[in-house]
Image 1 (tube, helix red, strand yellow):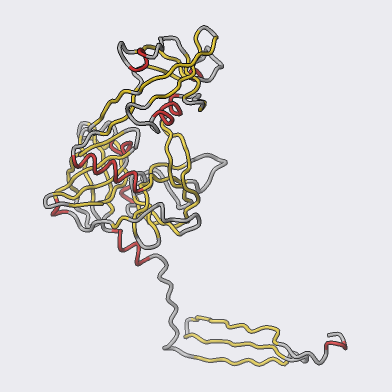
Image 2 (cartoon, helix red, strand yellow):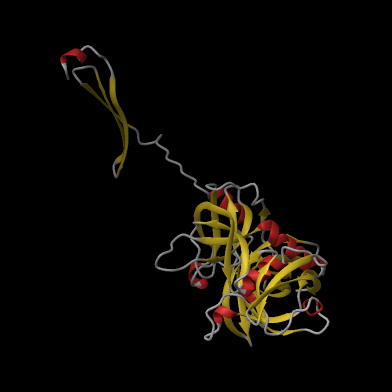
Length: 355
């Protein structure tokens, strides 16, 4: 110490070390003080009053755990695929299970396994490819718990999240719990030729987690897990459908209400998918007679490049922009015909699905 500082009195360091050993436990408290660095060591041995408790997320996990099920999809009585789901609602007769459309797609029969190992046949109430939402129903007597639903809109980036699911091998890793944070909101991602607005999380997501719940720190479901990005350059990027969106579709299925979407009346494909084209845009293979597209003057062979001045390079982006509108809305479509650019106004028609 320099001479000019020798009379300064200060506390340099205070360290509490907790040591656990086979023979018992003890505390070592070490303090250094004064300009002579006088050291005091005090050892306390106590075999009964040392308690270290770290519950983590065990309480909120327990809150939702028994509502989660393994979903088994069969084709002609042979197991075809597995995923995850969770009971989100019940009435006097049935429990209703949310999962992904792609978990049950192409299946001919379906079962779910509850945490008490009951394996039960279920029925599909409704399913929609575009939203990637499906609802199953099961006899109420098998339901162990109903998940509490939260709000994705109330979440902030950085908030704690966790997932429960059946990753990879459902028979071995069922009801695996993983933890992370909400990494982003309103992410626009493309999957299976569909553009979706989703939540992003770094909670570990693996094949088999699809359809499972993404929860907040209170054990409330804020999203339905539906995909992850996977490559050598990507790690910790999973996505979930906001629970508000999922519930809107689910209730439509349960109530038997149609899902109505605007429609053009065309058959189309992406120019970029053709071996003979280096252009972007949507090529119209055919136009239905008397359809909204036909009435607006669109023809087979036209190439759509914009909707309301928004570039649409693929059919996925065309649908994404189209479905922002309501039936009866007018949209401006920019297209090419014989190399020349044109615009036309289309009054959108409607088509509906009922699961």
